[in-house]
Image 1 (cartoon, rainbow, N blue to C red):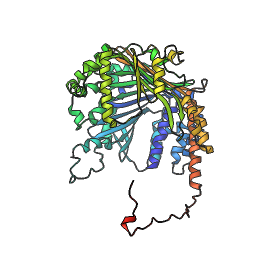
Image 2: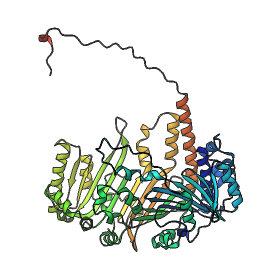
Image 3: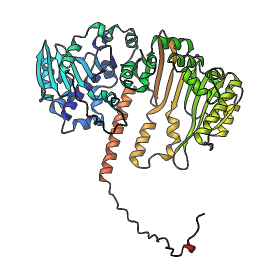
Image 4: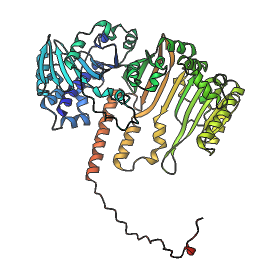
Length: 560
């Protein structure tokens, strides 16, 4: 079993880091109901981290030294040409969820079919070899490797993906119900593979304009996530599936491109929804985050923040769309408010931040937290505050939960420290944080400062040499994360993500390879230290006197 997956990994890694040429018709080879799809530009990745550099990775070397790794797999890792795979073409990976569970597939092109056949034969000697209609098959339990002329497909069956559905077929309180057995494969893998070779354009992603838009983004890796495909199975038999929630996920798809640039990892995304949800997005999406809410922070040491601008009416319309507005109003009236009060009270700005991360006297992470919203109608907002106090009293039984708040005519803020919240509300002319230059002008903005978190917790880092080395490697690697989104492009909501690294001059894929090698080496050292550690038996010779025995009940001390 281990040999089998080592051989499969050899093909996968070779295709990723080998050269390839992006095709314009990628969607032709992927079923339209794929829940996840990846297209990997090996040519671009190979320019950023060569195969020889990848082989120098400590984890890679350890894998090559594994005695269970077959000679054919070792030969493939040493020289990708030994597999017969054409490393001048794309690697495609996708996952399909269906009523029998699901399956994953890897597709690519061949340069030498004879070499590939020899490689598969040596890697999977127990496979059942067959041929039908020009397709060669090497069948194993739950997996089949195939090739036809200059193309190959490797498929894995995943019947266990449907296990959650099976659980809903039984009453959870029925103690006499039979145990749920491990799902068994009922899929004819060779037939399923043949269907992929003969996939009709109408049954593929080639005709999906959303997929075409995603593939038009420049990137080293393209991804496609079909939320509807997952939701249909996840909600099957679930009480949530009986509600009118399908409008939330029908047509829901997110796709994007990832680039490994110098000093940063960048991802641009497009998110799509059903026509009704898209209409709500366009009508009620926000404009720009309120920069004043960020500037009010009494500290420049921002560890993380999330800001959002939206139109409050959109929430009410969304609840109406899925048919729960009546239920929401019924629940709200119990605490003295209505949905209309919520809409009037909120101007449409939300802000969450954490600053000054440090460890407390017990070594636990601590920070200043603030959650703030802009006020629309003050009278309506006061009703929300009163309702919040009622809920807080119910939740904490009237005890002080150590949550503090303050407000003025513009903003309401709540947090974990009264002094910090008071300063936030009173602030007017604080300096503009540098991060605003990168996130302003968007309806959604997020930020995480890894360096601030690392520095705040440095006194609590592991004191052993290995733990300190891991901490040092991380502080030298990760700088910050920046996220923006919420703007519309046609029917798509755009998103942008940047993971910035400390080294701004070296491409991020090369840095990730080096970092992974360092962490792998340190983890191995830690494991070896644990295996050779001497366990000292615990020997406590302290004698504890037994409590006195009272024979006269009159002398028994009374309880306080």
